Image 1 (cartoon, protein in one colour):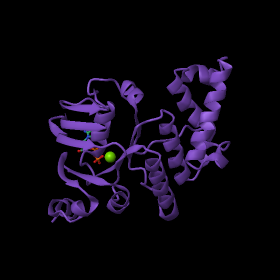
Image 2: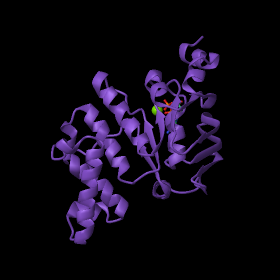
Image 3: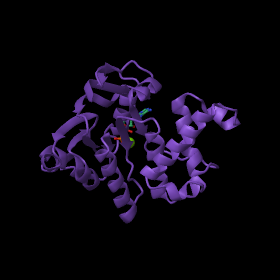
Image 4: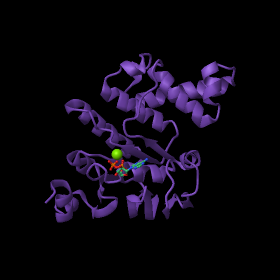
Length: 249
Ligand code: ADP
Ligand code: MG
């Protein structure tokens, strides 16, 4: 589904991502771990086009995408939940998702915000799909509440719902479990597993190694911008380079 080859990006002469190559197979959950500053978020932003690479190639579903704008990659089927993403304040949960649906159909955020008249069938379709996405992530009962008043776990579910509006094939989640504890963390893990069971391919950045290794089929480890390990969770956990990067040994 995704092939990244020799990807590099530097800031002020310092590599954030350096000669990274990886592949993600259809239907796989691929974890990306690494210490703070390892280049995980930069890698995600390069894949989705929110940053441009200095070198390297990115193929997605057979298309070269490394010169495409983010919205064109999104249209091909990539969707990202950014690290520390926020919900829209002053909008309900349903409205938060509907904005994403309008974005996808090209009806436009502006006309949505101004409540300009639109085709009735489109509106009905959008409403139905919004409800389906809210049910998918377990937020149906929260649809009419102000989004910013949700508990943090539900706000994460809402961000997932917004990402699902684009009907992605590949979902990139940047530290979705950060700040979540106990039951909230379990619920998010269960949701990721359900989305995979639905056929989504998932790239998952997490700081929490236990969380990733539990969910991922394969784990890529970054350190100082480079891939230092790539394998099954068990292989990666036992890798001396990985232990050294994490424990400073
Ligand atoms: P991670 O997500 O693994 O914590 P990042 O990708 O955010 O790491 O950052 C990797 C490195 O690149 C860090 O040293 C960070 O300071 C640097 N970096 C990231 N984004 C920028 C930017 N926009 N400008 C300058 N340096 C950046
Ligand atoms: Mg990050």
